[in-house]
Length: 384
Ligand code: COA
Image (cartoon, rainbow, N blue to C red; front, side, top):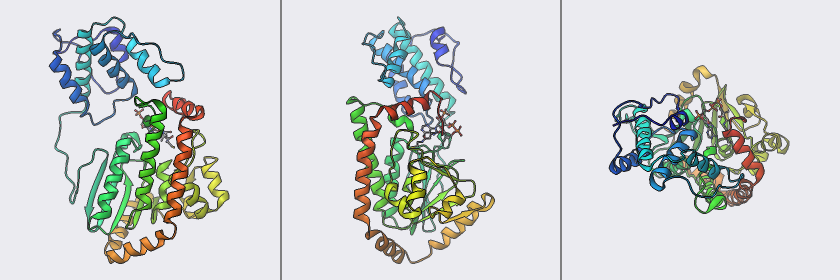
């Protein structure tokens, strides 16, 4: 089934942790194998990383269209340029060989993820999501961001799933809803890959679509009808911090941090933070965070009123969940109606702030400052 990859392609596809099958009888993959590999690709649970995705793209193009013959994209069109380079690098590789290598590569990625196992269904689980673990137990709906290997960065899929999970939690019979992260991070903010998937309409369309997604995402928090609690289990970055002003309670473990590095990224604040942060902590402290990228410790965030209470790392989970279970025994209607009274006062204002922030961000995403910052991150030059 498998055959030896060309030396050039093999060099390109060295993937840590993925054993490529490079020996075996040479037999061309059929079109059926190729189509099956396309389907298998869509079932991968782990993101194989940008280098591998480029290789998959290049092999696909070569297999279906032959050698690259399209004009070279401009220098600033960095995503299409990277794709073009990958395709071009396959030279005169035949379509049959490209098809085989595509099938080999996808098989290797599937094999590296191990045999499919039935997902353990946690007690009280309500619906299966790809990027979240959502459970409802003892009156608490818990929405757990579940991409620990990517520090729970929020992909487009995750934004959509979070909106769906919030919608379900708002309507089910749970009393309170909790958002938390799996692994060592609470969340590393917007997944910067969201900016590299350029649709057919170009980057303007990408910015417009992302703006609409963001507007709906933040709206889901503004309109959430029940008490909403953040359990911050580790560092929180970007949008996972800015929406905290829309939660009713924020509990943090001692080692958590809070960072909104928008100017580093050529961007601007969202999540209504341009309004909620100055209101919560005063304009001077909000400016340090939102303009000058100041990272807060959990204790500093508590002192500024962004965090309700900080717990020692060692007892965080047990103390917090004991408390939340007790809260969930309070009369549900009284809790929901009281929350809605507090929120109603400024709901219109929050929607207007959300709209204005989104409008500004859509412009920012098209700016050179922002593109350069994202390029630097993926070239490994820049981290927070
Ligand atoms: N978008 C896309 N990928 C992200 C990400 C993000 N926001 N945050 C983390 N990741 C990915 C990394 O690229 C890495 O992927 P890889 O294993 O395929 O290389 C993986 O998650 C683990 O992150 P890594 O950078 O190796 O961990 P670290 O502990 O050294 O650093 C961060 C963690 C969060 C400081 C660093 O990943 C970072 O700076 N991320 C960008 C955060 C950001 O700018 N968010 C947007 C704010 S508006």
